[in-house]
Every structure is written in structure tokens, then in C-alpha cells.
Amino acid sequence: MAEEYLIFILFLLIAAAFMRDQFAFTVLYLFAGIFIAGRLWSGRALKSVQFQRQHAPRAFPGEDVPVTVTVVNQHWLPVPWLRLSDSLPVELAAPGTFKRAISLGPHERKRFDYQLHTHKRGYYTLGPMTATSGDIFGLSSEQRLEGEVGHLVVYPRIYELPRLMLTSRSPMGTLRHHQPIFEDPTRIRGKRDYTVGDSLRRVDWKASAAVGKLQVKLLEPAIALETAIFLNLNSAEYDIRHRFDATEIAIIIAASVANRVVSQKQSVGLHTNGLDPLAEGKRCLPLPPRAGQAQLMNILEVLARVEAGESLPYIEMIHQETVGLPWGTTVVLITGGADEALFDQLFQMRRAGLQVTLFLAGQVFNPTRLRGMAGQFRIPFFHFRTELDLEAWQH
Image (cartoon, rainbow, N blue to C red; front, side, top):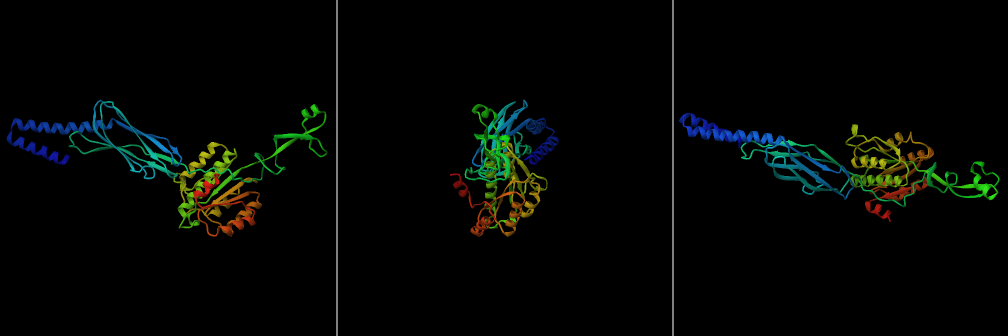
């Protein structure tokens, strides 16, 4: 349109010069002024426009995330028309885009609200949002501003696992245990009369003075549950027919186990050979066992972003990263299958003083045989084919 208009002005200029008529020059000045004024107006007005997108940075699957878009005209010149466009991932919005066509008066502010619908875990990029405008006559080419890119982290789904009882060999903790060798001196459950052989450290001198004979403290057995989760996301070790579903189930299991351990006020860490798009070289760095809600959020953050792909073999990762684990650590292994080589590695870990629990995710070949092998090695074994199996465990 702008090129045709310039050709038209050039034609007027030639005609006015040829005719040397005052009216022709007046028409020329009028159309040239309209073109220049529109060009300057649209460029100056668009530069004074600011827009931003605000939303919660994190969510769980099934939550609706409110998004607020604010547009401000900071100049005294009005903006005749402005087209806003924001590209959104199809996993978060059915239409896939946010579009509005508006006009802004001098120093006017407008606000728009919409929602993102989360269905599955992931690390999503929002935008960039763009603003397009032009002059009121449509004579000059459209000008465009581009905003910042936003991100939304959708955590993996978490299932409560109240029946999951992870075992540990670490003494002096806060969880009750059936083995009296792991007694916690801070948890007193009663007293009894002193007998020969009792340690004087367990004598309750105040109670003894009150009843006139020696009384010994009865202590509750307790353990510390320090857990390290080893999540296998090497795609080559999953059945290609069920690879996507199985790896997603494995991630959900890891999130649910971490939530279970943290709910017991114990330490949990994460090791995975999955690919992290934000990590250098895309390799996930291990998270050492820590306690608290902040550690759970760190683990969920990694599990939201991590992707399955060609990476370090699972057994090699286990061999490398179990070396520094302290004696008695509970190691939770989550993978899509098992063989004799893996069970041999688990047996070596048991001999090294680690407590091993094996979870299989997705459709597994001959699970009955694998369950039998786990029983021979005295390794707790769990198999979750789909999320329905995890839902059943909640009841």
C-alpha cells in the first residue's frame, strides 16, 4: 500500500509541476502531509506502548493458570489500532493463541484475562507476545514490537502412597522401627525396673528417686530413612511400543515416592540419566538427599523438565553414583525393565550396606519371573503398569 501511495504522490508532483496550478500543489501537499503525519504518528505511538504477561510460574496437572495481559499507552498520542498476539503451546490452550485488536487513548491502560489449562507435566515456553500497529489510514507498512518470552513449569502428577513402607538400615532416626537395635534415646515410651546388665545411661534417676528403686527408660526403636531415587530415562532401555507411556509413569512414580518420603520428614535425593533442557550438556545433575518441602519442590522442578532420550546406560549410572552414598541409604530404583545384570548390581549394592527397592514402570516382559528374581534376592518389588495402578494404591 505504501509503495502505491508514493507512486500516486509522485504522479501528483509531476502533474502539479506540469500544470503549474495552485490547486494541484494544494492537493499534493495534502496527500504528502497525510502520509508523513501518519508515518510519524504510528511510529511514535507504538514506541510508547508497553505490554506484559503475568502468571504463576508453576502449576500441577489439572490446574487452571490465570494469565493477565496489561497494555499501557504512555504517550499523549492515541494509538488508533493495535493488534496483540501471543503464541501458546497447544498443550496449554485449545485455540493455541491469544489475540486481541484494540485502540488506546492517551495514557490509557487496558487489561485482559484468560486461562491456561494444564493437562500434562512439562516445561513450556509462552510467547513471545507481539504488538502490531500502523497509521490510521493504512498507508504505511505495519510496525511490530516483540515482548519477552515466558515460561510455565507443570509438575508431574503426584499420588499418595500410604501403603508404601520403605525400609532402611540407618539408625538414630525419627521413624519407628521393629528392630530394637535401632533405639532412639529421645523417644521414651515408658519405664521398668532395673535388671542386671542394663546400661547406667538408661537409668532414669528422677523416677528412681520417686519410687525408691532404680528405673530404666524404655526407648522406641527408630531409624533414619535417607532415600536416593534412581530414575532410568534412557530411552533405549524401554520397549519402543510403550516407551512414552512407560517413561511418564516412571516420572510419576519418582515424584510420588519423593512426596512420600518428605511427608515422613525424611531426606530424599534424585539421580537420573534423563535429559534436562536447562542443564549444561542436557545432563541432569544429581540432587543429594535433603529433607524439607524445598527439596521436594527442587525434585519436582527437575521431574517437570526432564525428558527421555539416548543417554548414559542405567547400570553405569548406578555404578557411578552409588559410590558416594553413605551406608544404610535406601536406594529406590525406577526403570522400565530388569535383567540378570541389573539384579547382580542390586545384589552388590546390598552387600555394600544399601537398602534396595525396585519399581518397574509400564508394560514389562514377564513380570512374574522378575518378581520371583526379586524375591530370591530379598528385594522389595513393585510394578505399576498405568496410573490406574497408582490410583488403586491410594486406597
